[in-house]
Amino acid sequence: VQLQASGGGLAQAGGSLELSCAASGFTFDDYVIGWFRQAPGKEREGVSKIYFSNGRTIYADPVKGRFTVSSDNAANTVYLQVNSLKPEDTAVYYCVATWWLYGADWEGFINHGHWGQGTQVTVSS
Image 1 (cartoon, rainbow, N blue to C red):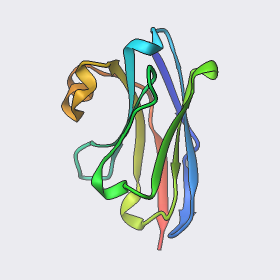
Image 2: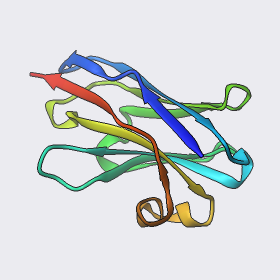
Image 3: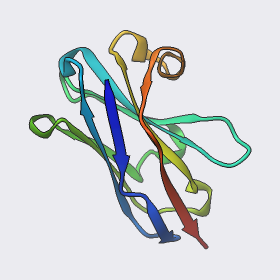
């Protein structure tokens, strides 16, 4: 299983970025892809996830209405559109894949997930 996140950068508060996660090495319909972030001095937190099999999406409360996760199954790529950015969104963002059953909760990604390298998002006020 390989995952490669990209698209991070520097943005102003209120701005937008699109993060991408290129995935390979697994049967996509059996997996769920999650986006996590980790700010300095804080634990990793799940922000969104998407099931390849049916496109179902889940969002954590802090990002609802601002972040949108989508997938291009033909390209084996998952996207995270991040809008209305806030300084507290500053973090390293990771994509992670796990079997759909393990991905029922955020802990399943942490305990059973395949993690890609992160991409830094920095939001200036």
